[in-house]
Length: 266
Image (tube, rainbow, N blue to C red):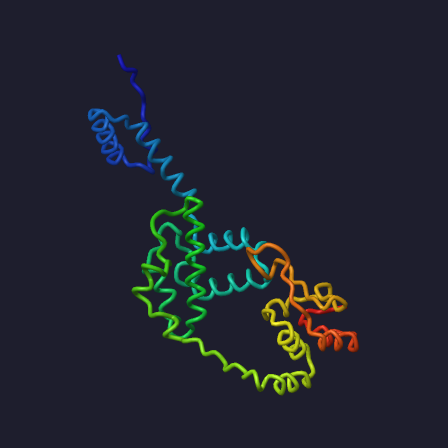
C-alpha cells in the first residue's frame, strides 16, 4: 500500500481558504492522473531557479565578454571603445534585457537610427552586438540564431554600408612626383612627418611605423625588424630594409626625428 504524504498549500493569510481548496483539488487531480504533485512542484521550482541563474542582462554579458578578451587586444583603448559604443548606442534599447530575450527587433531598434547617419560606427556596433550574443550562446545563456548576424540576415534588411557611406580614398602620388613630395614632407617638423618619411623609404605598413620603437631599428645592418604583434597569425619576425638616406639621417640626427617613429624613444 502506497504511503500517504502531506503536501503544504501555503499559510494563511498569504493563501486564502478558497485558494487552498482549489490548490488541493488540482493536486488531487494530478495524483489521479498518475502525476506526483509534490515532485511536479519541486521540478517547477528547480526549473525556475535554473532560469533565474541563466538569466543574464546584455550589459553584464558585454562587460564579461570585454573582460575576457581585452588582454588579447593590442590596443589598450580598444576595450574602452567597446564599452563606450555599447553604452551609448545599445544600453538604452536593450541593455537591461536578458540575452535570451533579445531578437532582431531589438537589434534593429539600436542600429536603425544611426545606420545612415553614423554608418561606420553602426557597423562596428552591429559586429560587437553579434560577438557578445555569440559569447552568451557559447556560455549557455541563450539559444537559436544570432539576431545581429549580417550575412543571410540583416543584409536583407539594412542598406549596404558600403553604398550608404562609400569609402573615399585619397589620390596616390604619381611616382614621378614622389621625390618632390618627399622633400616637402621632410621639411615639416614633427613626429608625423618623420614617420611618413620612414614609411616611404621602407614600404612598411603604417601600423608598424606608429608602433615602432628604437630597438626594432638596426641602422648598422640597415634593417627594421617588426615583431609578430604587427602580423597576426604569421610566424617569424618580418623585416624591412632601411634606405641608406634614412639611416644616415638617423645617425646624424641622433633623435626620434632620425628614426621617424611615432612611439620612438631613446
